Image 1 (cartoon, one colour):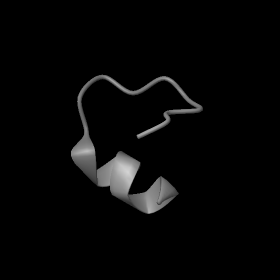
Image 2 (cartoon, rainbow, N blue to C red; image 1 turned 90 degrees about the vertical axis):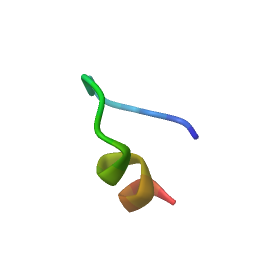
Image 3 (tube, rainbow, N blue to C red; image 1 turned 180 degrees about the horizontal axis):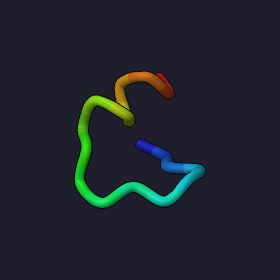
Image 4 (cartoon, rainbow, N blue to C red; image 1 turned 180 degrees about the vertical axis):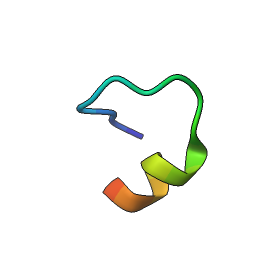
Length: 18
């Protein structure tokens, strides 16, 4: 999972990127 933005600890955000 690649996070392009600052994320504390939200798996929900990572799912949105996929």
